[in-house]
Image (cartoon, rainbow, N blue to C red; front, side, top):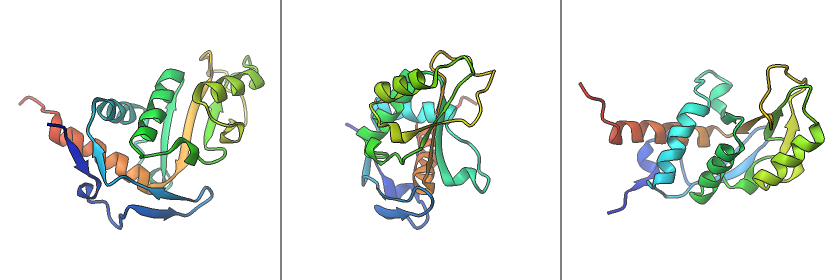
Length: 171
């Protein structure tokens, strides 16, 4: 038997299936009624638990973030979010993805790499203001920032739910 999670069971305050998220990158957000608890969702939850934002502060809790230098992991995360209707790739706001790079990176090549690899338009990306001499990853570092408190809460509650329901800690 396959497991499905009713999103409303995550008990998120003021949640309904269509929510207008206001702010700089405002957008209408639609969530599925159910989330299929498939292997790729379990992978995504583990990945986001490790690579996503854990900040509960005022501004940190308003956004959904992922930071990683491995293009395959970023692509997989975006594809799983898109597949399960948690975040459509075409709903990523303009300038929603920051590329961190060092002074040795060629900005044009770096931008072209991420655009092609993630299959997203140029408008979705921007560069960190200054190169960082510590950013030595071949393809820079990809930071996805989406101002969407509801998405952040759904993901956080999904992480908590799966940890509580499926991960057994020995005594």
